[in-house]
Length: 292
Image 1 (tube, rainbow, N blue to C red):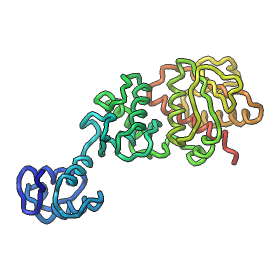
Image 2: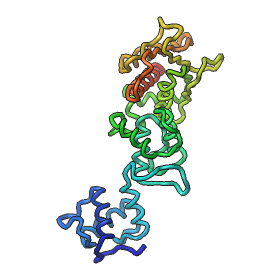
Image 3: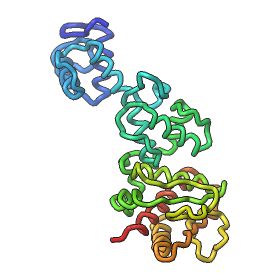
Image 4: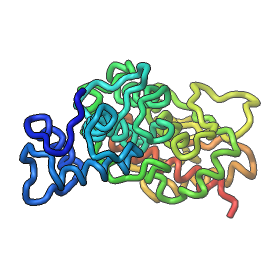
């Protein structure tokens, strides 16, 4: 492309100015006027400096590509794994939302790599839509429907770990945790495992279908009608009370080694309720495993 530089006028300059304004840049009284002069040139130089580009005040191919990347919003295009990798602000937004929901994307760097594809696939599978790893309109709509659960929340570690975010990273790394789930409770178990891995990438937390003999580590049975209902933690509704009850059960496990049992009686939980319940369960696990 021909560089856009000081003195140029027209639609191409307006496009650059609109993108700068979308990034929060104040172009002064002239605003978007299609004229590449003082305020626009200064804004381009500032943008180049922030993105480690040659500060020549011109919009050449590299600066243009960076401007386009920076002004993509989630939903503007299909996001999927390809080489060279797709990158941009929309990818960063996708990663932030998924990470805050407990689906580990790796570093939130705006690059759609294999970890991000895996997180998209896990999210799609979790909400029962086609799990193809492509962030298209249906996936974006689903994320927007869960905005209340991720908007404004830190992606690393997830803020859902309210009670013990610091202790979580320390204790999850040192122990194997098997979440024994029947088909009806696997959604809850998978979300707990996702949150655990988002908090601590080396966490060894996995969903299994049956209690393993001699498997070692902590076994947590999550069932709608557990065999040992009398001692089960009633997890209905989630919240701090559930986290506290589960932490007590986990501390008992550290003494006698018996599996921890959790009862989830309502299997018709929506995504928001599943997220809240999973966060409470992980809080309880982390608190119970903490020694301090």
